[in-house]
Image 1 (cartoon, rainbow, N blue to C red):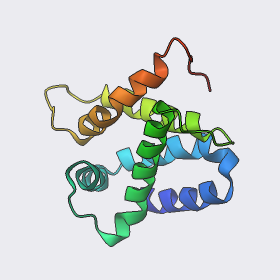
Image 2 (cartoon, helix red, strand yellow):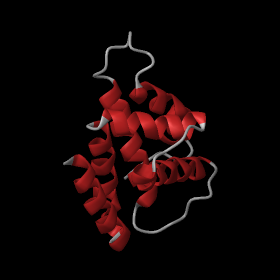
Image 3 (tube, rainbow, N blue to C red):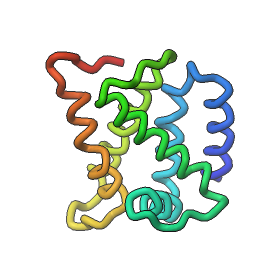
Length: 134
């Protein structure tokens, strides 16, 4: 079950911050495999909709990743352990996953998520004064 694996990885990532560069992208891909849950999370984050108590931890995970990405754009992110690049890599993987969706389905939850982070990703990845590296 993807949800159980997500919870296990979430606990592992909290206890071992050095491994988040591997754990966060995997957690996000597990959410992609649960489209109903992902839709609820994106709706809650982007539109201010309700989020069930059982998915609150997942919503907090996605929200924290988005905040970390935005903080990196603002130049406020200086933590150890590679968490900055982990957030970027995680959202790049979401962008790649979205390429497999029919572009006529513009209301797809992955497209909505990509649109919410694409500006920050572009600023980080295509900044000539500070090239992105893992």
